Structures are given as structure tokens and as C-alpha cells.
Image 1 (cartoon, rainbow, N blue to C red):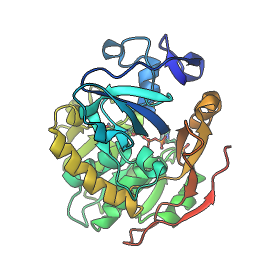
Image 2: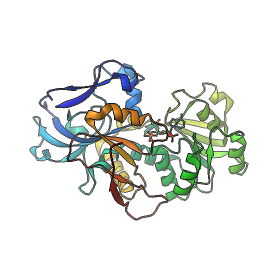
Image 3: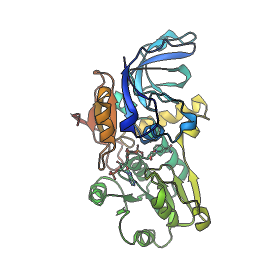
Image 4: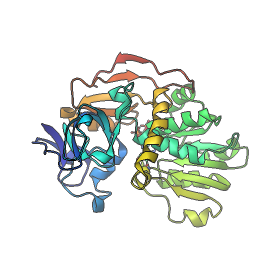
Amino acid sequence: MFRTIVHTFGPPDEVVVDEAYEPPVPGPGQVRIRMLLASINPSDLVTISGAYRSRTPLPFVPGFEGVGVVESVGAGVPELLVGQRVLPLGSAGAWQDMKVTEERWCFPVPPDFTDQQAAMGYINPLSAWMMVRQYAPVPPAPVAVNAATSAIGQMIIRMLNRVGVRPIALVRRPDSQEQLMGQLGVLAVLCTSEVGLRRRLHELSGGRGLAVAWDAVGGTEGDELARALGPGGTLVHYGLLSGTPLSPRLRDECPEARIVLFRLRDWVHTTERHTLQRALNEVFQLVRDGTAASKVAGFPLSAIRQALECEATSGREGKVLLSMSSDAKITQFEPCSRYTSSSIAVSAECTNS
Ligand SMILES: NC(=O)c1ccc[n+]([C@@H]2O[C@H](COP(=O)([O-])OP(=O)(O)OC[C@H]3O[C@@H](n4cnc5c(N)ncnc54)[C@H](OP(=O)(O)O)[C@@H]3O)[C@@H](O)[C@H]2O)c1
């Protein structure tokens, strides 16, 4: 069996190594899962870099999201589970051939889901859905989404479109402006390096300031978004793509703004299983109809270095998936552009790039 492992925190391309290993036998209440596909998410990279070192004992196998098949069960777990496709949530360890984990953290995959849909059907879709459900204002209140080329940024935009909201999309690369404009239901696409960005945001919000802004970047970009809020506006801060936190002075600078931090992990680890299952069922429907879908690039687990290189490439389109099994097919597909109730089309095979 083969796995990736991190013995010391640091840059992912330097510290993620691979090795042969003998997977343990599942203990009481545990299952052993033959992993099929796993995603590479920014939260994996942040964990590998050591940002959460107080709650991450070394060594560890990375990967918070993936899909696999139950291969054997420990004492107290029904044999019936063997052969079932599941999402093992709540812990790292997806980037390996076999993951041993608690049965209570395994959620069944709908039979109509492809392995690929399942491998990307949890972190981004559920986070986007929770943040839109909780904070989307009644249209035509002005809203903005930054890092709009990211997988979750695009999901948030499509989910807002479903409730009749056309956000202002912010991107860091000027060449992604036209591409996004054609694909998503947005009021405008602005580049964050544009001179007079705050004035443009003010104009586009009809002089009212933004009602809500979703921030995956933090740092000066997140600060600017908070400053563009109107009275009583909300900044939903959920990512740190810049690697820099929001300014500690922001709350004093924008006393009328509400700054909320969203972390899926906090919700998942304090929620009853049946509530989580119900939320997943709703989100799976959005994965099916393309609202919460992403483009992909696939690599075998043995090519972890190339996969991490691809993940770090600017302008990369879609999620990077790791494949543990030759049975797990990775197909390239287009998420729906504007929201329609039709299913997404599965088209040509994706080549490993
Ligand atoms: N809080 C939570 O619970 C939660 C849940 C899910 C995701 N997230 C966060 O959401 C963010 C996006 O995740 P994802 O899976 O959608 O990532 P992703 O698809 O890998 O997208 C990242 C993209 O964002 C753009 N980007 C990178 N750095 C940027 C920067 N400094 N400023 C603006 N854009 C930048 C890049 O696109 P271009 O190269 O095209 O510019 C990059 O390809 C991450 O920070 C992640 O941790 C948080």
C-alpha cells in the first residue's frame, strides 16, 4: 500500500513525501476504507504548512476530502457496510490507499454520484451553501465575492444567482475578467489591482456600499472589501489565500460593519450526525445540477509532486484530484454557467497535465 505523509511542517512541495505502508486493522467502531479519489484543498496546504500545528500531531497523512469504499469493519460495525462508497469526514488522511477511521464519521455516497462528484462534494459545496443560505441578502442589495476564479468563489456566485442576486466579482488577474463575465451571472468583474477600486465598488453599489461581501483572501484585499461595505453591511471572511490576516484595526475603522468568520470545521465538529446528513443531502442536489460543481485536473497519487505543482499554478482552472485506483475515472466536466435546473454534461476525458 502507498501513502503520502508529512513528518515536518513546511512548504507542501518540500515536506509531503510518499512511502509504502501496511494499513492497520480497524479497531472497535472503525472501518478500513479503500480510497478512490481525493481532493487537494487550500486547507490541506495550510495544515501541511503548520498553521494549525497545535491540533495536528506529526507525522500525519494529509487530505481532508475524498471518497472510498469500505473494505473491512471493526468490532461493533455492521458487516453490511462492506462495499459501500462513503465520504470519510472529520479528519485528514484521504491522500493514501487505505484510510482507517471512525464509522460514525462515514457518510454514504448517493448511488447516482460519480466518484469525482463525491470526492469534491463536501468542503466547498457545503461551505458555499451555508454561507449563501445564511448571509445572501434580498435582491437587489449589492454584494461582492473576491477570489472569484476559485472553485468556491464560483459556487457562491452560482448559488447567489439562484436566489436572484448578481454579485460583483473580484479577481486578481486581468485576463480572467472576460472569462468570468461570459460564464457567470455577475454585475461586473473587477480586477483588484485596478486603480480606484473602492470608487468603482461604491458606484456599482449605487452609492449605498455593499450589503454583503464574501472574502476568501484576507490581507489588504479583505480590508478593502470591508471598507466598501455600507452601514450595517456584513463581511463573511472565510479564507486566507493571501496568507495575511485582516487588519486588527478593521473593527475600529468600520464600526458599523459586521465582520464574521466562517469555518466549516467548527460547524461540522459541533453538529449532530443527522443534521450534517440533511445538509449534505441538500448540497448533493446542488452538486448534481452543476451549481456546486468544479472543473478538475487529475493525477495518480504516485504523482503527488506534479499534483502539488499544478495546485500552486496561477490561472489553474478547477480542483486538483488525486486518484488512488485505476477504477476511479476522472472526467472533465463543465459546471453549469448560469443556473439552470438541467444536469451537467459529462464530456471528454481529462488528460493528466
Ligand atoms: N472557511 C471554510 O470553511 C472554507 C471552506 C472552503 C474553502 N475555504 C477557503 O476558500 C478559499 C478558496 O478555496 P478553493 O478550494 O475554492 O480554492 P481553489 O479552487 O484552489 O482556488 C484558489 C484560486 O484563488 C485564486 N487566488 C489565489 N490566491 C489569491 C489571492 N491572493 N487573491 C485572489 N485570488 C487568489 C487563484 O486563482 P487565479 O490564479 O485564477 O487568480 C487560485 O487558483 C481558500 O482560502 C480556502 O481555504 C474556506
